[in-house]
Length: 95
Image: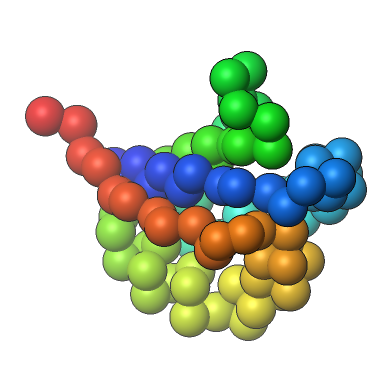
């Protein structure tokens, strides 16, 4: 299992719109091959900061299966305009 973590910086005054859009967009993740689970957490320390944690069966499920899919294009169109800067995603595995 692989855990992808993205630290999201949402543009000022866009947090509520981002949260509403994310609720609509999350079905894209749920239907992706290799998807296990996800959660979106809002920072209590920094305004407009979020952490998106997604568990995938394999790294390839995320990088190839999802990121190179038509579904990812839809995901990107719905959510990426909220971010400044675009998030860096890191992948982790249990030891």
